[in-house]
Structures are given as structure tokens and as C-alpha cells.
Length: 363
Image (cartoon, rainbow, N blue to C red; front, side, top):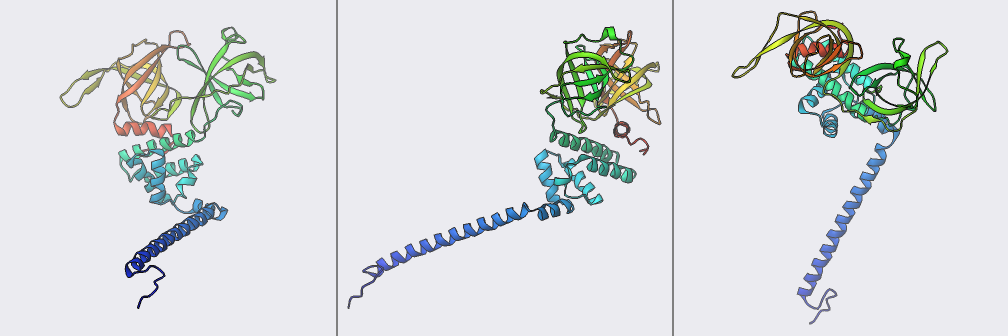
């Protein structure tokens, strides 16, 4: 007796069509799974965009996954990442992915960690701590770049850049829609000021710590109602971000001394021997990587010197190499730009403490 197989006229045909049905069924199941996954992801994305979820994420404690995401995005080293996680756990810092959007709270947390733990951690960890702080400051500053001068607030320090690389310090007196009014110091001689309509170069540091430079044009000179001498310059829409230094720098005006150095070359290490003869100078700026001093001696670049830190409790010598010597605007004065080449970590920490305005909390 012959049976009429709907799937085929023979058992072989039936089995072949059954396989087709299985394939179609499996494909349908896979498509269904993809749809379910897509739908769940869509719901999760919508949930992540709700104010309640965002607020919850902001307020929860930072975990290792947050640090890993932040480190990968900003190219943090393993040492920086490990220390940042340690600080976040110690102070129960809210989600770093959100809290870094405001740098001052993070900076305060790092300062507090130093104040509370400086006697319990090594000199190397203290050094890494301040370098991490500056790295985070640069990350924050880079994410908040400005492109023009229209938003610069009054009282912002600003420096005129001369062709020889020297600078003159001024202050923004007023920011108007059509111009910047820059207050000149009382010591500025009117006859030495650039002429009206001439181009002028400036540099300044924003509130985020990012350094900028720009070209402007002098419109005129005038006096403020208080009798202050003002330079009126045009706005600029072409701010140039200056290359960030490896170390944060502060400006000083403190008397100190320096001496020449003899270098003794060894098989493994070089030895630097400062001379007993010392010369007076003024330290005008300093960072963990170098400093600038003003002296009456026109010492050529390439010379080795030993500088005494004017703010150290003990006599901490910093061995450095003069990389540039420039004439100052003051007659008979030379600015010696020095790069440190032999600096114990403890001495560098002394500098970093001063740079970070934590001198009242001794190492």
C-alpha cells in the first residue's frame, strides 16, 4: 500500500524536508534571541539615560572598573592607576568618571591624602602622588579648552612675550565686548611701551591650569578712573595651546645662592661636587624639573650649577644644567634657565610640596 507523504513521496524525501524545517526553526530562534538581546540593550540604554540612573552612578563609590576605564581613556600608567584607586578607596571618592569633571574636589582629596598619609608612605609614593595630581589637572584642562579671549575674567594675570623670550607681567583690568583692557604696572615707562596699532604677543594660564598664547593688536592707551595705566588691545579668536610641562611650575621672587659644579665621571654613576664659593641670585620660578634664576653673571648655557632652595628648612642642593641664558629687561641682569639633572626624590618632593602650596605641612 502506498502512502501519500506530504513532505515527499519517500521516507528519504521526508527526512530531507525535516532537516529544512529544523534549520528554519533554529534560524527563527536565533533571530528571536537577537531581537530579545537588542530589546534588552535598548531598555538598558534608556535606563542609563534617565536622571535617576545618572545620579545613582555619580554618587556610588569608585571601583576598579571605573579606574580601568578612566586609565585607558586617558593613558594613565599602571603606577598612576594603582595609586588613584588607592586614594579613591581611602576617601570613598564618588565615581571618578563623573567627579573628574570638576578638578578642585579631586585636587583637594589628593592634598588631604598627602596631609594624612605623608608619614605612612614612602618618598617615592609622595612623588608619584604629586605627579598624578598634575597629570589629572592636565587631563581636566585639556577637556575644557577655550578658543578665544572673550571670556577671560578681570584680574587674570597675563604676560607680554618679547622676541628674546623674556616676559612682562600685567593683569587684565576689564574685559569688554570689543577689547581687553590690560593694566600695566606702575614701573612701566610710557616711552618704552609698544606703539598703538602694533602687534603684541601674550600668554596666560586659564583657571584650569592650561597655558595659552595669542597675538593681538594694541588699539590705544588710556587711564582708568583710578589713574591706572591701561593698554587697550583687540580680542583674539585664535588661541594656541602651549605644550604642557612635565611638572607644574610656580613663579617666585625669592633670594638664594648658587655655585659652580665639578663633574666627576664614574664607572656607574657621575658625582657632582659644588664649589664652596657661592653667588647671590633671585629664584623667579621653579618646578620639579627645573628653575629660573636672575643673576648678574652672564653664565653660558651648558654650565653645571648647584642651586640652594630658598624655601627649604635644610640646605637642599639642586644640581642643574643651564640650558639658556637671556638678558633681562633690567640692565646688567641675566635670566638663567636651568634643568635639574641630579635631584634626589626627597629634594624634588620638597619642591613639589611648595609648588602645590602645601608648605605648612612639612614632609
